[in-house]
Amino acid sequence: MMPNAPFDPLAEAKNRSEAEPEAVQATDSDERENERTRIAARAQYRGASDPLFGFIIATALSVGLIPLLPESVELRYALAWGALAGVSVLSWLLGTMERIGQERPDNLGWGALYGLLLGIPFLVFLSQHILAPAADQLFPNMTAGSLLAFLVFVMPIAETLFFRGLLQGLLAFWIVGLLATLWNIVLFFPVMWQSITEHQAVALVIVILLLMMNLLYVYVRKRNGLAAAWICQIVTNLIILYIPSL
Image 1 (cartoon, rainbow, N blue to C red):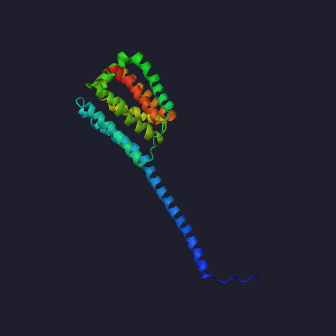
Image 2: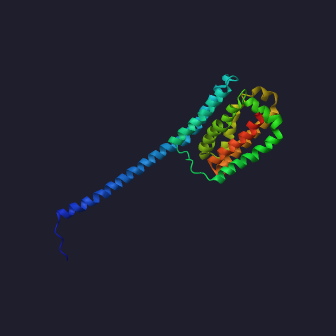
Image 3: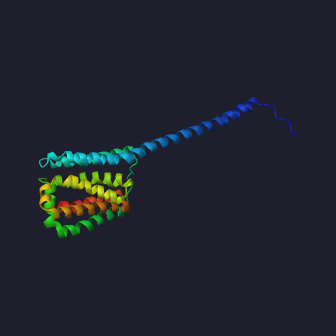
């Protein structure tokens, strides 16, 4: 039987000093993991709850601003789309909204191509009887520069960030398309209410067109990314709403 080694206090203290950093490191690692879990839980709560609440707030704001019509169409549009953009930016900063990475040029090209494929047939066949009157009533008394700013910057940025950037990460793409169409109806139809009540068939065509546009945007977002959906909406707006108004 081997004799026990003599007790060495210096060696024991050295072993404890070497083991303590590992224990401290393990504790710090556990604390960091717990903190990441808490942050992820808070972000998931915001990402799952705030978008729908923001949609309700923006829709209620759009309805509440109807008394401003017809004198302040631009102000109503700016405030309503600004509410959507505000919710999107806050969710991007604080929540789980997907960050926009570096986009490939071919994806942007696909976005523009899809916008052309949808917009040109409507421009050719519906421009004179539906698109031109609808554009004049949706954006009454706007200069060409103001209309261009709304169709290229304000509307596409707000709706792309909110519906395709925020909601599409939480809901099925067809639900997002329906919600975006509902938003457009609530926003646009009070501006052209008299024409809608007199021409129900035209109103139906506009609803179908809005639904097709929004379903196309969510499809492009799923297929080619967020920037492609943004480009697609800009191109479609220019063809279907801007060119007929000139």
